[in-house]
Amino acid sequence: APRGARSGPDPGLGAWAGFMRRSALGVLRVLRMTASDPASAAAAPMATAATVRGTKRSAPSQSPGDEDEVDARGVHPRGRAGEIRRSFAADAADAAQSEEPSTSSSPYVQPADIHVAYTSKQIDAHVRAEFYPNEGDSSGGIRLVGLDVEARPSRVKGVTHPVALVQVTTPDNRGCLLAHVYGAMGLSAATPGRPFEPGSAKTRFPPLLARLLNDPNVLAVGQGVAEDLRQIARHFPEIHPANDEGGAEGCRPRHRRGAFVDLAAVVDFYDVPALGLGRLAAHCGFSDVVKPKSVQVSDWSRTPLTDAQVRYAAQDAALSLWVLERLHERYAPAGVNLRTWASAFAGCVTRKDVTSRCKRLDGVVCRTMRTHMRARLERWRDEEGDAKRVLAFRKSSLALARHDEGVLAGRHGVNARSTLATLAQFAGARIRFDHARDEGAEGADSNGGRVTVATCVLDERETIGIGRGVNKKRATAAAAVDALRRLRETKDGEWWCESLVKTLRGPNAADRMRATGGVAGGLDWECGHGDGAGCVRARSGVAAYVPRNAA
Image (tube, rainbow, N blue to C red; front, side):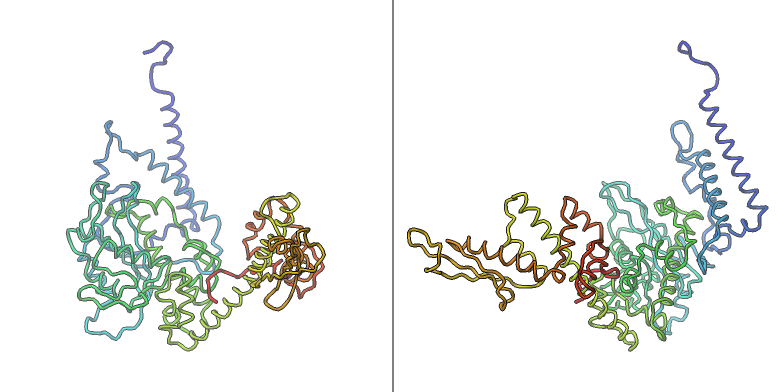
């Protein structure tokens, strides 16, 4: 041993062992407290109350093949120490969460029947039992199902893994199918040298699941569900894109609009201030929903799925349908049921799609919904008109502030003519300069030259400025200065506010405009204009406005 080195056990290892011993004792204390406290026991994970049917699964902390994944020293990469740390953190989080009861009026309820299927036979058997029990009966109407997909995360640039898990809920949202298509089709992991090729699977995509996903009478509901369906279609040729009119062999062709209801379109239609499924769930009253990031980025291609993966996957699919029902209760017009209301948004993804649906009303049969969507379109147009006026008012004030600063600093390119053109563009007005010769005017040059007179005309009817010069350029510049002076006297409070112009002078004026949200945010300044001026609207902004090009 080197000189001065201590012999015997490493003190660092002893400290680590002590820390792990204390962590394990902490786990036992939390478990003992949970067992002795009925309230804490009632807050146990919902997976114990859910019926999980399908292939028998091993302990969630170990997946098949983990016993072979050891390093050169024979130590498992995750190890018992990592398991104790994860268990202690999870139990401590559960104990802390049980101390603060949920504030939601109706907590989220996990589906009672979660069916995990790892083979095509199991997947199709469940689809047949839940969706197609009577093959000869084709009288079924529109059905809403929650849909979500999971894939193995890609940690290598340029490598995309196929969809591993497809989650579909039953129309009553009491059951959920977790179809592990990755294992059922015998897929293998993609690598940079061997990318995944659609159609290269050992077995076909489960036929009845393909029929369900291609069925135009089954509307898939989810946040970003259109992209989920496109992702499935990119990897498996048996599934067709959301807006494709074609159909798989033996399947009915899809509706032109797309057999899906994207929650993003519904949220955009009603201007709901929430983005993402988690925030949308909290907005709808499901504040007790937890979406662990560690589970989201876990390996979904491995089988069997862990308990945490099963809970997460079932929650994502079922929560979409719960959120849609809650949005229907809050925003749908009276007398319109859930299926009729949701069908009005079928196939809409972007704001442009929603606006187009409100204009054309294609596929919207319900008279109440047609009136409802027309009224919403008119409101959007009014908001867009108000927002354009607010934006023009603020930009005109900022343009004048920059003009004043540029003139004082003598900056090149800052002149009255360019500022006039900017102001006219924001106000939707037209500026024209007319020129004429004035031979007898005073100021003619010694060589007998003639003076040019420039006239600035606003909207083809009002003369707002006159200028003279030895040539057109100088006469136009003089007329622009005179026109800008007169406009600042007559349009103050209508096109801009001189008090706001003074407020916006400074190097951080543009940053301040951006910080207010452009249109939605408010600006503070004092002026003497009355309530009828444009300052009132421009000061408060248009809080409900979302740009959508509806006009």
